[in-house]
Length: 261
Image (tube, rainbow, N blue to C red; front, side, top):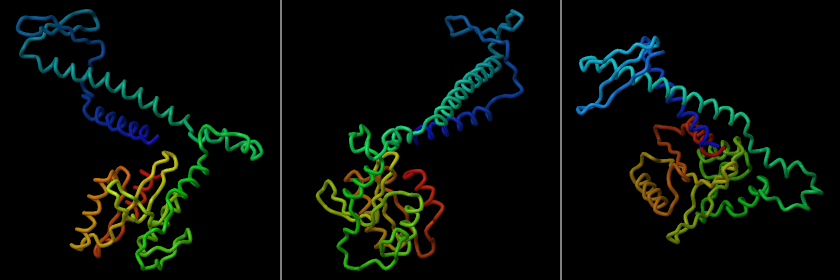
């Protein structure tokens, strides 16, 4: 669904661009451009609404260019506007929950008799939790900050992140074990599930991003992730802070809304 919303946003941007480029003072209604082939190129004419025709001299080609450009903008604007309306209508009518409700609205007595073609969200989420257990990092230091979900994490920023995931009903686990293609096992800060897309993401928080040694180690880690198919912006999300720049809550919330809900 996000692709449809992204397409809608892009189309609205194109429409805005057309409206800025349109020459509002140039009226081409009732006028059309015609041409005939010549050895040296084309000879252009302007046909008027009364049926008359004007020959366009070479010195007046700028007029015909402007007309052709405005005609293009007009037709493109009509096409883009139609697509915007079609997408808006589709998004207004579409509700993915309708499909899930076909099974979920049945009584438990009937549900146990059915093998659903589409796995219900609750069942999928439970299975995902089992496949992605948390607290797998063998690092000896225990967490000292308790989250709204009732678990312990190691830093205040990790608590803030965990509480934001919880607030937005994003299924997550803290410090899962991730076995890379290389065979090495790493422990990202979080593993998360976009329930609608049923897509798994990993989240790394860089808490000392300005310190040289820490930054170098984490750049190496991110590079290692990407070599193993865990790519920043695709299935790896990153947050960071420094001694002089605290965690950007608005940016985190925007990232959660764009990628996880």
